[in-house]
Image 1 (cartoon, rainbow, N blue to C red):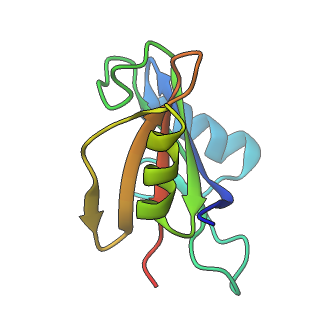
Image 2 (tube, rainbow, N blue to C red):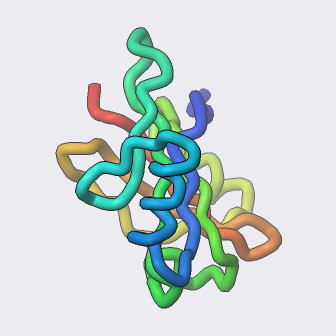
Amino acid sequence: MAKVTGMGGFFFKSRDPKALGEWYAQHLGLSIEGWGGVRFDDDAARSGYTVWCPFAADTDYFAPSAQPYMINFRVDDLDGMLARLREGGVTVDDRVEESEFGRFGWIMDPEGTRIELWQPPA
């Protein structure tokens, strides 16, 4: 059965993502990468990693959610997970993206939070 294998990341809106990243670097020691976030390699035996990333407050990446954050979960079988969620009546975005980072799909939870599902590359 397709399932979540871990937290892929936490994305949230910020009034000033660059300044906020600098604050986290200075005070908490996060190593902010050029794309504006941090990648935590939490288990070398498992594909994927965990990302922390502030987005601009006016981003539409979380749309149609009105929430100021989006959760990303790693999954082991994106197609199977999306099919099972559709069968269960969950709102599933028709779009699936593929890139060098893996495959991505999106759903909405009952409270209107957009959730990104990520199947890392093999």
